[in-house]
Length: 135
Image 1 (cartoon, rainbow, N blue to C red):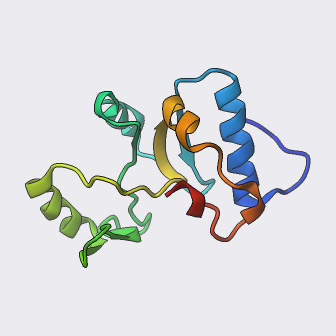
Image 2 (tube, one colour; image 1 turned 180 degrees about the vertical axis):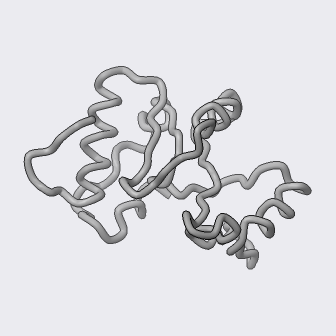
């Protein structure tokens, strides 16, 4: 846990945390907001995909109704939008994984190599748009 002396917003916190982990030499960094609660085996499941990916993220469901996604997922270069867990699972049955999509601060596991390529989040976004420069 890294404590900051002043509130730097989400973007500042992720910037500082990722920078710290990177400087400590960690191979992977698991990103999540303070209101995210991963399932017990989440990290193990994500780790099983790392050999082929520089980042991997879980499906994020609403804590009250596990059927509803916390965030609608819009596929890049597509009109497809997923709002429920079942709609996403049905899509994945045919496609295995959803490529080139990231919800960066919601349980995503990222590699050190990826941070080397894209850099740190732009801390000056404070709260709004903090994930914009990592897409």
